[in-house]
Length: 158
Image (cartoon, rainbow, N blue to C red; front, side):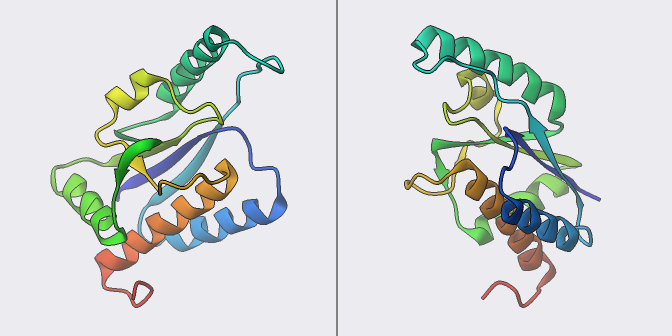
């Protein structure tokens, strides 16, 4: 069974976001081993310098690498936009090639260290629009669920 992880920098703050993720986690248990891993966000001063931001991103990258497994799929604004059926196809192709783990990565409000983007199999973007990281996590959970529904021939995706 495929293991799908979402490695996130920071915690969900609102109860309704937590409940939404739990609902998708429950739904996904039929299709895969699904987990959300939260990495603590590095502390920065009120107006951090570019060097301070870079240092924090490197620290977070180390924690992300320690938590992630298998194929790394970073989410970043400059990533590739794909459709839900294309995401399902990615899952199918990775599984056919013997991969048992996929780790999506959602960074902090400052993004992700460049090394994580370079190490990713594919960098993905949800949209050219900007979303709060908490909403992006829920949206990604939903898209993972939708991809498995597509692969199983379910009626969820229309």
